[in-house]
Length: 80
Image (cartoon, rainbow, N blue to C red; front, side, top):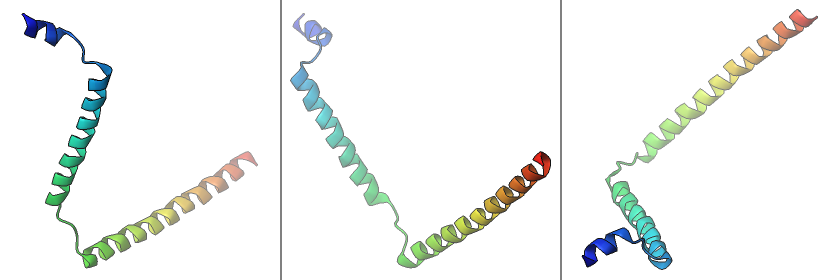
């Protein structure tokens, strides 16, 4: 009977705070365990990936800029 009463009552404020910080600690612990499983790229691979991303950003910037110039010219042509 006493066990049923304990299940229905909410934990006090102090216990909820403790449980909150235990949950945060558990999350960080799990995160560190998962980070140990990650296969990190070598320095050469990291530089290669960075160069590819940088070149892609430049190409996309040029393409978007050309579309913007074209749209601006089209609007000027239409409006007058």
